[in-house]
Image (tube, rainbow, N blue to C red; front, side):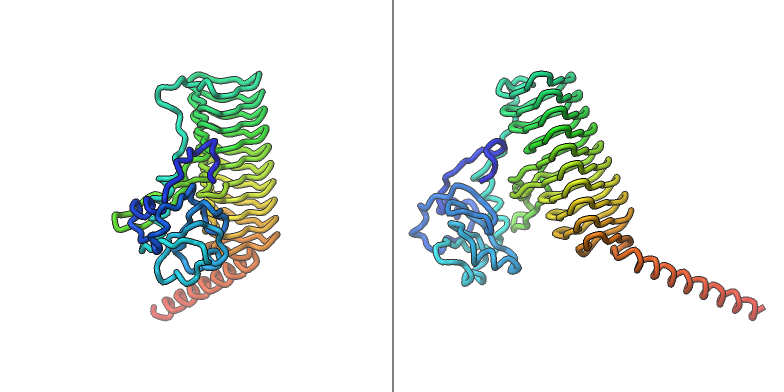
Length: 347
């Protein structure tokens, strides 16, 4: 179930209603009155949740799921466990998105509420600059400073002695102590998830959170997306430069450093002590193990072993990269000499 500090539960909703909303076919109509409380990925769904399967790579999740029901294509039905109610659709992901919108709703700061909501909890010594907005249920620890025009969304928890810069937006997030967020950063906004449907592309609801542990720094105008369902997590003492993009479900370990314009795609896992040069990029669902380093401008398209330094596009070990560079330089010099000699012979 999504965190109720950030998302309002709108269930239960019957399978019959979900079939109507999504255009799916309920395989056993006699179960149309069965209630569903939430959506969830198949691998963590409980007995009151509905999931979906659109990719055969995740058939094992379907076989082992404890979900009450599942959206899927008819050709995958034979893999479902007994007791999981099936809803057939050609667009399982889009059906899941529509079900999520029906079952869960983000909690927003009411337009007619005071800027500092009366249900927000501020410990002694919190300092607020002009124009700050703090939503209902937010909790802010003592000694924390919040800059002008910052927006702290409903349910957000900020620890003690933090510094939140001007024009920062924080939502769907839990922050530890001594977290420093520079001006213009956005933490906890929706990640990039898109489902194709016959009516056109639609956004996938992002139902997770962001967790920033103690002593994390987030640079100016950087963006850290909340998880699609699981959390986006930044480990203790990790330092993030300006203009960095961290996508949904990314998990970063302790003592990492990300230089400006680094971009991490969704569901990347980063170990402890990993370093990223400026404009480094990482493809989705990859793992960078402890102590790995990715040079400036490099693009990782495979996992990086512990302690390895990689550079280039696509990224590979720096030793291999330097050998390739030396060979290319030698070939270019050779070609240049041959062209010069040919030109002299033609004179």
